[in-house]
Image (tube, rainbow, N blue to C red):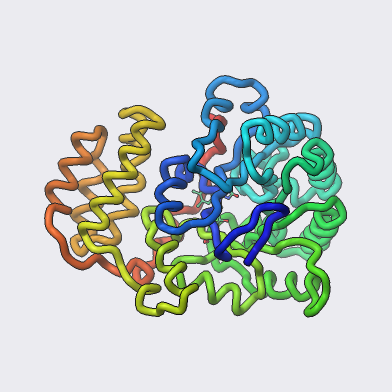
Length: 360
Ligand SMILES: Cc1cc2nc3c(=O)[nH]c(=O)nc-3n(C[C@H](O)[C@H](O)[C@H](O)COP(=O)(O)O)c2cc1C
C-alpha cells in the first residue's frame, strides 16, 4: 500500500484538491465513505501569511487526517513561510501546486504557469523542502507539461528530476497540459512512460508517483493502476456529489465486484445530502452553505432516477429549509439510485477551475 513519507495509506486512492468544493465538509463525507487521504484545495501562501480569513479556513478538524495542505505561490520565501504555517497547523503532508491552469494564477506566475519556467519552479520546491525539513513529507502536483511542445516535455522532466533530488516523497501528475485545462482526455500513456522511466522494475522507488485525470468510476481507479503502474490515484471530478465512489473502490479492493458497482439507494442519498449540508452549515453558516450546497446538489442529482427535476430543484436552494424541502419532495421514499459511472459528467461543465482558497 502507498506510503507518503511517514504517512501510510491503506488504499491506493485519495480525494484530490478541488477549488470551491473540497472543503472540510466534502472531505469528512468522503472519509466516512472510505476515502483514506485528502488534499485541500490550493491555498495562496500570501493569504496564510496575512492571517484572517485565509488562515481561519486552513484550520483543521481532528477527524480530517491524514491530509495534505496544498500551497500555491510565486516567491520562494513566501511559499516557504506558508509551508511552515501549514506544518504548525498540523497538516500531515505539504503539497505544492504546479498545476492550476487558471489565467489569473498564471499571470501571477503561480500554479501551472511555473511548468514553463523550471528554474522558478525548482527554486520554490527547494525553498519549501528546506523550510519543512524532515518535519513533514512534501509532495507536488504537476501537469504533464505546459503544452504539447518538446520544450514543455523537457521542462517537465527537469522539474521532475529536481523533485526527486530534493527528496520529495511523492508527485501527482495530471495527464493533461496546462493549456488543455480540463478538456480532452488525460494522457495515461504519459503516466505509464513516467513510471517506467523513474521506477524501473525491481529498482528502488525514488518517490511515490500518483496519477490524475479521467477517474469517473471506482473501476477507473484500478484501470489506471493496471495500465500505468502508478502507486496512487487522484479522484477529482468523479467524486463531486459522489462519495460512494470510495465505498465502491474499497469493495473492488476486497474483490467484491458487485459492491464495486453498487449505486446508493434514495435513502442512502438522503442521508448523505443531509449530512453534507449540516457539515457545510457548521463550517460556513447558512448563507454560504446554501450557495456551496447548490453546486453539490446539482452533482448529487445525477444519482436520482428523476435527475433533471431534482437538479432544477437544487438550483434554487438558498437555505437549510429549501434543502430540506427538496429532500422531502424528491427523497422521501426509498428505491434504487442511478449508476453515475454510466452518466459521465459533461467535461465542458468544468472547463475552468475556481479561484484558490482566499483568493477572492
Ligand atoms: C473545479 C476544479 C477545481 C480544482 N482545484 C484544484 C486544486 O485546488 N488543486 C489541485 O491540485 N487540483 C485541482 N483541480 C484538478 C483536479 O484535482 C484534477 O487533477 C483534475 O480535475 C483532473 O482529474 P479528473 O479528470 O479526474 O477530474 C481542480 C479541478 C476542478 C475541475
